[in-house]
Length: 335
Length: 254
Image 1 (cartoon, rainbow over the protein chains, first blue to last red):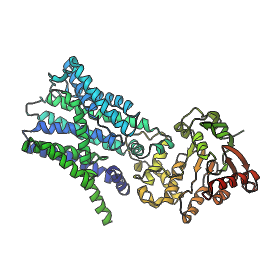
Image 2 (spheres, each protein chain N blue to C red; image 1 turned 90 degrees about the vertical axis):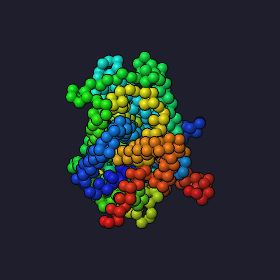
Image 3 (spheres, one colour; image 1 turned 90 degrees about the horizontal axis):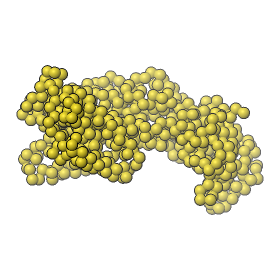
Image 4 (tube, one colour; image 1 turned 45 degrees about the vertical axis):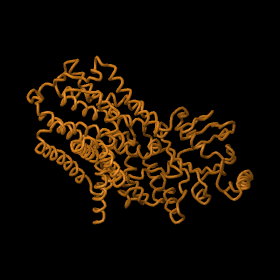
């Protein structure tokens, strides 16, 4: 069972106020965690900002995989395109205003989403998965070959964003980038909450469960998926742009199969079909990676693997999904 | 002629075997027609041709006088030709209210809206409540479909179809798989269908056919062998032969 539907089924009984409460709680949790992160790791804001950018990627992946049932191992294509779009805008076209760079990233991601959607949605199941892998490799190779624009394997360097709103310099400690990232994440999260529970979100859940039934209702499953892919591209593109602005460099790794696969791992870890799950997965995975790789640089991947196996075996709905499921069951039992 | 739905000389063969062979029929608003026929008569192929899931080799399908032969299944639904499924196709993780709301929103061209929630749309909810109330599903409105009984799922299947406000409704064995104790509810729902709706029901259960239909069409080996009143159908020699033949061929199966 996906969490979104459980949330909705419960909320159906509770009505609108309950949902608004959950939204505000969600935003409060994001902002609260952001403050805690800032206080606990003032010297490691770069990691936290990177985490925010990746969270946008995982949220974006959740839209197509969790809500629409499209399995993809190539989602970094959207993230990387956003990163390159904003980086290229800054380096080659002199668009160095961070918000304009962000807009370029969002646009680039949306276009990449459209392109990927057109290709990927022609197939279903395993062939679809293979197409996504092929796509991410094509994107990667294209960026590698177009080195006069992308810097190739050296990466696209020399991105120097202007102060945010003309006031806030992107400082050495990454405070401005961090704040920008958190605000971006909060805004995106709030917008996505609207989308996933709107009629369109309901339509997408229907497509995931039974496209034939959706057709029999007179709606086009493909059109719905395509729209969602473009939205997903915009969100991933925003994450990519944030990464470009905060690190001031774009590398080929942002357009890699590894990043695509890792984002899927994060999503599964947290729980698919829930925005909270996507956030949980990102935070847990990246912290775990950071701590374990520092503690044991040789075997950290083994431990990440073990964690994932444990979660998939014992909490198949993901960390957030399982916890929310338990909470829902307790609530039902009390009624 | 004021046919709301018409099929003209529909033909389709698979590998030389004519599964639908020159089938024609016309329906007027308010018609209650049962389409029956022995196993393998071509009923499923006929439904697929009519709904646009299969392309005919020749012939025409018209809705409200407009030819939809070249229009895909989605376009036909939008023009008012709605079907229900023999085996329920519902979203297991969604609630009856969500099903009906989605159908209502889709009908009104609002299913692509990216803000708002149907629970907060009074006009949608009014329709949802009315439809589900009529079918006796009010209590289950917010329960997940996977948790409601099969008979109720069949009723929901009808509710979803009705929410699309069809002109022509194709019911594919609406009572299939429903325990005897629950068929009464379904029969009631069928009796309560809007009076101006043209209904074509494909059904095996002859009791249901006789109670529901005012006209019976018998399909055998891809052609219509009988088209007339329910009282005449049992007396018709060709119908008897077709059914007896199929019983004989199928052993005890049918």
